[in-house]
Image (cartoon, rainbow, N blue to C red; front, side, top):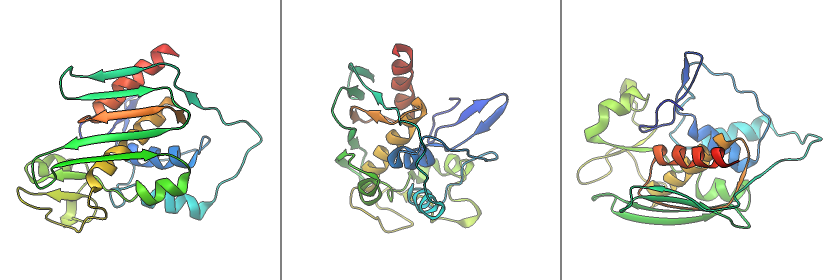
Length: 219
């Protein structure tokens, strides 16, 4: 993992692939464990959510293979954070779940969501449509990530000082749902579907990758 600002970037042998987390989130939710992805430079942003990837996967279809699907079962508590407000914890549980507390100044405010994964359809309904978001003050960085370029403003949520500028929200709490989408995607870089309880507060991609490294170091 090379970069984690606004999106997750993977680098190997001098090549970088940006914005992998939305595709990985869809793959994690659908339990797809054997897939060849060919891409140059950046995973398509689509509409800023994981919904487009789910729809394409459904169009292509899935094939059951004659091999067991391995899970990464969390068997102890892992935690990262700043020792004050920010924290990310993953601990043993019977099912995979992610809860997130988000807090920004208005117009976003404080949002909380608890997603318990049951199947891909639950993910499709509750999490997949939630789009990435950014702030007007960071528009230059957002454009560099391929969002809002060429006059296009329909592949992310642009937040101004007082309101959302460019779109209607798909959920009143779309922001926190997208944070959960990102966690599900970043954790799939562990290589297996995860079974454990994730509790996050005010965290981002950097924290997701740090806890992933802790888990890999212990397994």
